[in-house]
Image 1: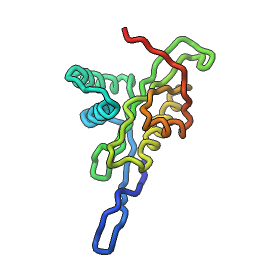
Image 2: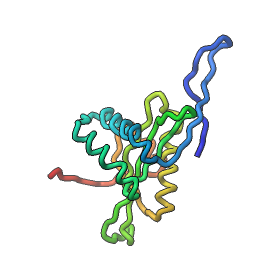
Image 3: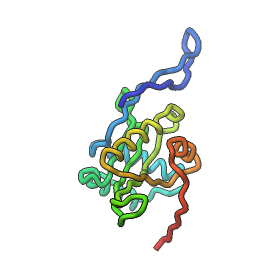
Length: 170
C-alpha cells in the first residue's frame, strides 16, 4: 500500500514548507533482511537492551530461513528513494485449542520500529494495518505483543488490550 505524509518543515526562498514523502508498505523479502535486522536491533537499543554479536549472528541466520517457511512475515515502510525506514513482523504460532481460539492459531507481533526522522507520520499505523490484514487472511484470530511505553498508545488506538502475562527465564 502506498501513502503520502508530510515530512519535516524546511526553509526555502519563499518561506517554510513541509516536505511530502511517499511511503510504500510492503512485505519484506530476503533481500531486505540486512536493513530489517538493523531496524530491529535499533529497536532493542532504544528500549535498553544491548545488541551482542551472538544476537547479530542469530538474526542473520534466523530471518532469511523463517521468511522462506512463512514462520515469520515482515512488513517494511520504504521511501520513494528505496530507503527502508520502518518495520514490523508477525510470527504465527500454534497452541492447544483454547476457548478464545478453538483452532489454537495465534500470531506474535514483533520488530516494530520506525526511524526517528520518520515518526509521527502514521507509518507505524500503516505497518500494523498491513500486518493485521495479513493475519486475518491467513486465519489468525488473536495477536499478542510486548510493547514499550512509546508504543503503548499506538497499539491501544488500534484495539490491543493489556493482558496479565508472566514469564520465567530458564
